[in-house]
Each structure stands twice: as C-alpha cells, then as structure tokens.
Image (cartoon, rainbow, N blue to C red; front, side, top):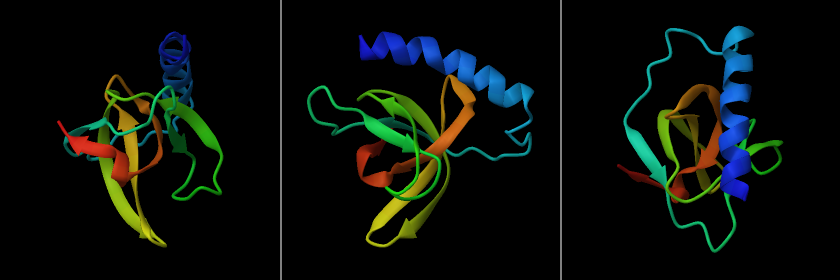
Length: 102
C-alpha cells in the first residue's frame, strides 16, 4: 500500500515543483543509484536538508532509483542530495549508507 501511495504522490509533487521553478534547469545529475538495505516495511526518508533534524519529504522503499546531485558530510553521516529518477523535480537528501550504484 505504501508503494501505491508513493507512486500516486510523486508525479503530483514533482509537477508542482517544476511549475514553481524549484528545480534549476542547469542541475548536473550524476549516476543512478538505488535504495537498498532499508529493513522490512520501513522506507528511507528523503529530507529537506542534510540531517535528521530536517522535515521528511517522502519515504523511499528499497529498489527506488535516484540520481545523485551532490554529497556532503554532516557529523558522522554522508548525506546526498538526490532526485527521483522518474520525477527529477522531487529533490531531497538521503543518507548515502542506503544507496548503491545501479
């Protein structure tokens, strides 16, 4: 059910961000990665900023394909700014520990 909700939300949110001009056209996306290592029915939280203190935008299940824009270290964790492969306008930060190269 969570995958169905995520699938329904992503296109609408991405369209709103693109129409609002929230995504610069010159962003240079890097290689494709996929979410992995998230336990059970949990999801990787995509956040507004690089750290657990930021608001969660959306949950990403294992297998979700993302493109990395940039990564930075905050404390002991490396956070990557990502966009969904199918909705590049939806951007946020995830822990690099849960990404593997596709």
